[in-house]
Length: 133
Image (cartoon, rainbow, N blue to C red; front, side, top):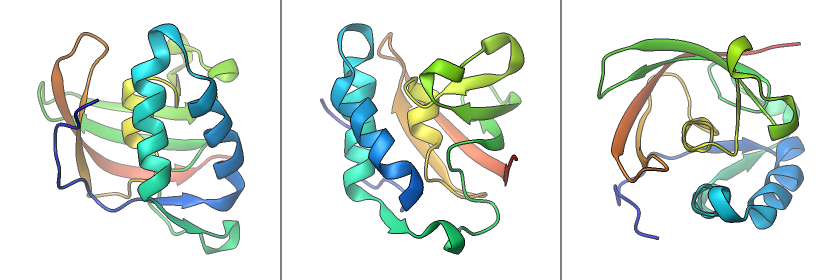
């Protein structure tokens, strides 16, 4: 897989999310294989912190995230969840989607580029993120 942007922003993952994220990335097949590979790359390059070190504005599993699609200019608020909890109608997006894998580990103010399943280049900027109980 070629990564669109060699200068990817630094990301931070919470230790409590790592094990399940690794299993998801490893198990991704078929339609999700490219996203699983991208997620695995993100896990490998991330700074890992303890759960209690989680900073405000960090996108972790279960975060409510407001981001801007830099291609369309649209702003969207979603909750980042594991695949079994995804529900597009409820704005609950899976970390095993291209947008979900791009969002994980970013902090408010950071931008990242990624490829859609159709191979389109996209970019987003995190505007805000908060932990949801």
